[in-house]
Amino acid sequence: MGLTLYTLVALVGGYLVGSIPFGLLLTKAAGLGDIRAIGSGNIGATNVLRTGNKPLAAATLLLDGGKGAVAVLLAGWLYGADAALAAGLGAVLGHLFPVWLKFNGGKGVATTLGVWLALAWPVGLIAIATWILTALVTRISSLSALVAIAVSPIAAWVLLDVRYGVVGILIAALVYIRHHENIRRLLSGTEPKIGKKK
Figure 1 (cartoon, rainbow, N blue to C red):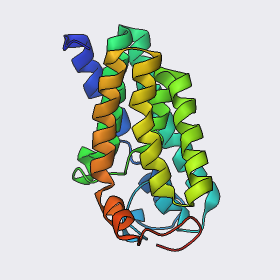
Figure 2: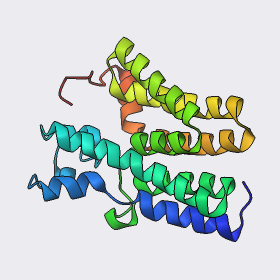
Figure 3: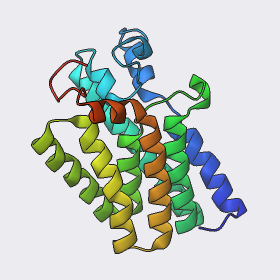
């Protein structure tokens, strides 16, 4: 992926699309207050679920994934494959570090899955299947997400080419950084399982 004017525009555009905090906007619109003051304080679907509003959490999941997909598809349509890759990276960056929220955003799993489904749907499906299988075995959401995110660049490298693999590694590294607290709890054996309160 070469750095050209088109890829730079796609990166910035992807960032702006990815930075839309749907979890925060939806919970405020529903009269549930500031999601950052609930549970983990995260703006993603998992924390929205802690409000007890399952439809709102599902909407957050779909919109967070959708914004990653939209950024990729729009950039690819306008400028081509390299721009689509740049937009995907930008969308994840935007979700993780939105300028509107003082660079404190979500953890990027749904947005990353949306990016992969738009960039290369087989990779996206492999990641989703990995998440589901890991969740069924371990009952730990964060571990399932981390395994799925780690598998994505490997699948991209094998099924596509080195450009997709490298971008996948960058995205995975960013998502892992945002999961540092979860990783610490996983290592200490204190990470809660699905269905249990944080």
